[in-house]
Image (cartoon, rainbow, N blue to C red; front, side, top):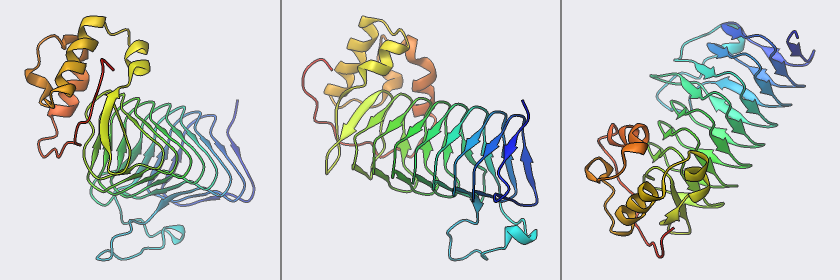
Length: 243
């Protein structure tokens, strides 16, 4: 199957398109950008506008002025209507493979989304954020710049997220609090009941230094991701019950 690019779409200089890419009416893709195989981009989305940083020149990428760190949309991702993804300023703004960005979602400069992330309608993610694989952010939530959302975490709709979220946590409310585990995501990973219990106990006790918690070997990759970010400012915990 060949790519399908609508006649009204704008594809700028410095854009690399993979195989079987779909780009809808009125969509704009500006370079530098790399769009992976089987990516679907909906009508009127804008990929690759310059970073919204006042100290940088607002270059005209549509005229061949390619001055920024790029955008990468990895294979099998779906970008729905009216989505905005901005150029990186020091690293490529990245959408991980098989991610879903629902309509009107917004990703600022230098954001990195892991594999299989879902941003629901109206979600805004501020600059320099890192969102772990499989995270799910609910409708109209707003993620403050430079924040972390751990792998497998879930953020409730409308949440104003100004702190960092550890792996497989469910966070919601205003102010946001860690309320329970994302049992669905843990179940899909096939994590044992013992490991789930150990993680729940750690969170209930407010211990978010997961590298020192026994019994979490099955979650080594997620814990390594969390521990690798040294300047964490974790969300407050208000958790009851086993989940």
